[in-house]
Length: 173
Picture (tube, rainbow, N blue to C red):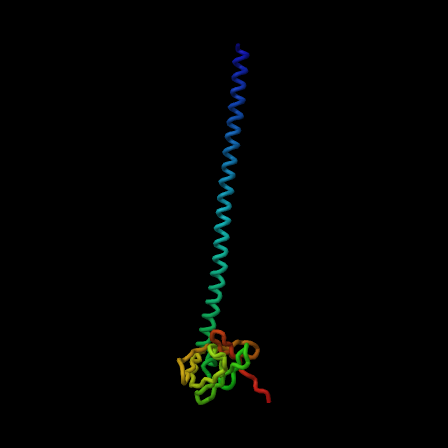
């Protein structure tokens, strides 16, 4: 009987040993699953942060460039000097759209009327101060454009608002 008792005891200890090892293995598997889920959550968080930061970085960069241009316009006396504005200016996309600025403070602006799809000549007076070019039309509300300088080897002045980007016309002799 003692052999039977020892056999039963050995079987029970083997079973309990296997059972504890199986439980330990199950616990480790659950731990691994939880760690994997945590890692996946961290990866998702990082992806969200990266996408937000990329957008934010782009926006902040644009804001910084815009602020820098504005500060340059305010501090650069050349964007308030009408001598840099006088003459003909042509739209970069449509050469039939152009402006002419006279020393006496008057201007003419040949533009495409979007509702009639006809070119029209607009006239009035203008002011230029700190890179802001304001056109006071004879027959409609005023309009303000940005007047700025790109610092290349030879500085280039531009007039910009919305779809308009005007460059100084070169007169051929």
